[in-house]
Image (cartoon, rainbow, N blue to C red):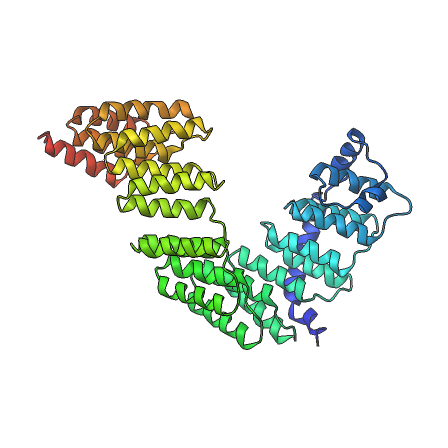
Length: 446
């Protein structure tokens, strides 16, 4: 029955082989020159000793050196050893290198096994060239290998990665049609793709089908659904999924909790978010920087700044170090509440910790100073941006223009606006509205 695969994929394979011949004819097949160079600059002990000791701590350049050792050895190492090395390089996410080394193995007459081909197929599907997947599938079949569930799951991941949803659904149906039983990875790959592209009803349908077929979902499957439900505001359904996970004995992880906490914060359910944080701690799930930032954002949004600062310090004491987004969130909370001095202290504290403020951080601080009637300081902060690798964007300019106009410095705002026009900046309707309203307020009608 599975022999029918060749018929089902005949057209895609034909196109793939045509492309492969084009690539080869243009001389883009990789060479061993890089590997040879590494071989000369770094001496390895016997490669067999390295293989015996394990490849877990191997660095990328060392892996290339080892490959060179192996292809120069006589007799050649087994295909199992080559496959182990390709697997290690694939885990480094050097997908194009794996494909290149596999092609070198082909040139040298080193015959792969199905497991080798599946590693390469996975790398092809994680690269940014969809056409190579069909080409490689054809090559596999030409070498006499029948694709298995791992092969097709990699191809499914590729279609999902490239947002080819219709192709992914068609392939999934074909996988079932030719007699394979999709596993949790196959189902989760498709569900994640559908959720990412907001095809929620279809994702739920596949999720239910998964249960009907006796495949137990894992935390990754649930996270895909929980995340999209939270994003579209269906937090009640997301909370139900959390309860369902617990009922099935599937422990939620930090991604599950963070998605829900962030959703509760966004709909104003701060108490529920804090309760969920407590549940998280009770279940020995360590919050990460995203969890803490979501909670700090919620506390700042509702003016509970001292609590936000306490959460910030708790975060640090628990060994979870705030990033630029966390600092910016806290600075924004203080500036919005006109506690700009506190916001500025946090800004300098961030710099002392070695974190570099970004454009959003500076924009928040500029807005704060404008809000408390200190546009002169706001302009000083603005002037620092260029020299600190955080160039102002159109939102920064709009915030400064609005602050200047609000505080009666319309002429200064007009000078900056004229500068923006001469620089041919991407002035938008917000910019024009700020200037027009500022001029009207100052009675500058001409």
